[in-house]
Length: 367
Image 1 (cartoon, one colour):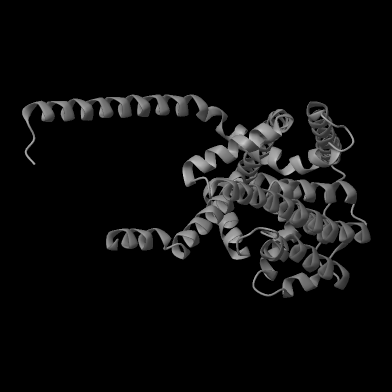
Image 2: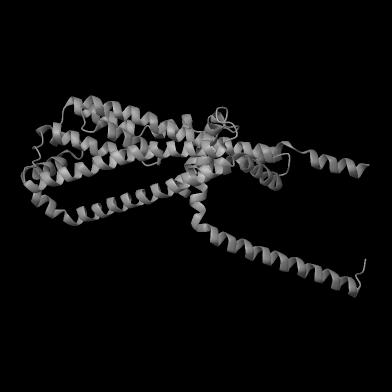
């Protein structure tokens, strides 16, 4: 069929209109994204917290009917108390310990006991550790001056880490407030999520994808908190039995670090060094050191067992998504990774198992 010049002109004009509209929509989307980017992490955290805490609001709704705003406010206030009180106590304890240690060091009464002769017999590093320890027990000031540049770099690194943790904690608190607002409008939010998912993947898949995303986020959150709690118990019991000063606060620090997805070895390794320096090398200290070090790495074994429970996809999918997401996106990636992989997994297998559309097309042609 030949196109007349008028038809070609009309089609060209329609194509130009479509391109202009698409370009304007793309420009609008880019500007909206650039404006929203500074709040992206905050809103993602708020969404994760709201999805995780919303089942608690549903339970409390039976007691306080039709008072979603009040329930959400109470939940957020309790969450603030649970986080702020231990954090404050831990910060005060650390500050007092640092101040006490600096006072002892300045007074000149701080002495490191000489190493036991058996330290030199440790495999590979024994002699080096013995020489370093011996020098520290004889001339600690000279040793500190010798390694002053390294100590300065380490101090700056620790300061940067503490600053980053403080900023992250501030973002977390603001996200908690935003999560409370989202929870107060939970029903509307759920309906909106179903509508968006249905628009993207079709009305038959929208509700199921929404439920899958919700269940995955809750499973990962419960797994993270559960693993951190188990590690706190394993390490805290050892600290108490060994008589470590501030054992309860240190165990609490293990819990907070585990929830923030930082390695528990940040706590266990300094405690092991403290025990060896103050109590020397013996069978008890060696058993304690090995046990605490292994307990600090227990999350690597517990994650495959606890992450992904109760989700309608195989556990390895959630685990790979959590680990891969954390490598590429940090703590937020720990939640986004399994959600994306779980949704992709479900959509892929639905596409594989649903050859109905090609079959219907063939039947239509034969008819």
